[in-house]
View (cartoon, one colour):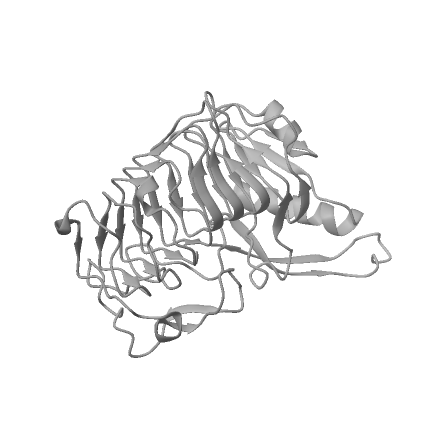
Length: 332
């Protein structure tokens, strides 16, 4: 049996038998494992290249302790349906990957009510977060965001540069101090005349802007290719050649199977409706939006680590004192 499956079963069994929060597992490259109870403890005890397995349930966010080593932090997922057996990983508060030290870290499969503090070369996938953020004095180069749901993606007195955001939904801020970054197959649910000029030389391709009807008066030096826009006009461009093959004046009701408002909802359907002009209209000949491109959004948002699909635990032990436990574990 794979070590990851063994560790997962131990964590779930601990949760089932003791009716308390399962521990956080820190697995080193040599296979040694430590169990801790909080994200602060995990940050204090982690070493470079450790894998931090977060259990299902509610975890307190980090206080003033961020990860200072390059680590992979993996939860069990954030989608309510996919996590129906064991629950989802829910962080109440913030989690951070400190600059310097934690560059190149990964966060996967969690729900974060607060900020995810990022530094260069970090990767965030299959995560639902309030904000993906580069703090003052930190560097934010070559960040990768994939299949995420996020309210804000921005930097404060810093800059996000040379990064990539793919197949993700952003509901509010997506341009502040973001430079030379590619947004590909994303949905932007902001409705205001957001100052797109704060995105410096960014590229937006195969994206959907279903609620912005007025881009404002500022000029943009970014590039717009094969997007769907509710606005009947493009942003004001520094160069007319910075845009091509965009679909203008297409509302949300004309675009999605079922979507309303500016907030993300698990019960809405962000697939292109039949007859949408965005079908097979991307730069790659695939659909515009989060279900197109080379890595389409997967509704379950389940990380690739083993996950428990079902469990059966007898209510009582046998006369010999044995407790029968059966797990159905799948490697995603």
